[in-house]
Length: 69
Image: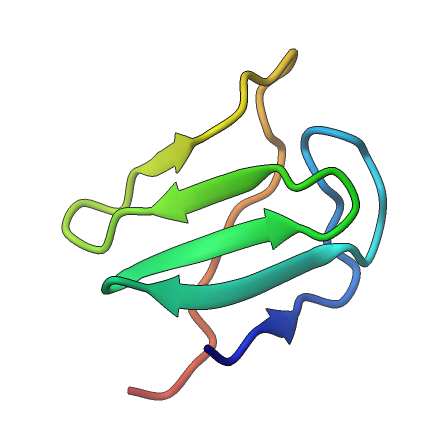
């Protein structure tokens, strides 16, 4: 599994900067904080996020695809 850091990204759970990695797991894009282990899955079918931890506030991060397919 190839994990890549997202420069400047802030974790929506703990607020730490430069702690988010992204990778693909079972065909689903995953965003994970290496500090608090908050995980969000981006559903490739409809683009909806699913979080595995309860968040106290809505995320202000907008995920964009910058990879060339």
